[in-house]
Length: 117
Image (spheres, rainbow, N blue to C red):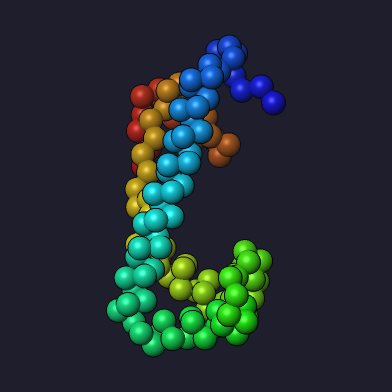
């Protein structure tokens, strides 16, 4: 796969590294934020923590859970994480500014320089 700029020129190695680091750091920060809030909320609600620990121990037999186990076999864990993100979203607001005129699929026109929240 070739990564190109908007003008069709190849993306420089330096810019590609910058993009990759941005994704890695953004993912790390949002995950750390979500986990920190989840731990805080579980500390505030020991009954919920006990239910969560019981589910984890039951499903995993005291071993490390896999992604599939968490996704498919742990509804309480999923509920805890989704509620955490509902109450404390990692990215509560997201601004974008149009760098060119664009028309969205629903027909909405966004002029260059317009900020969308």
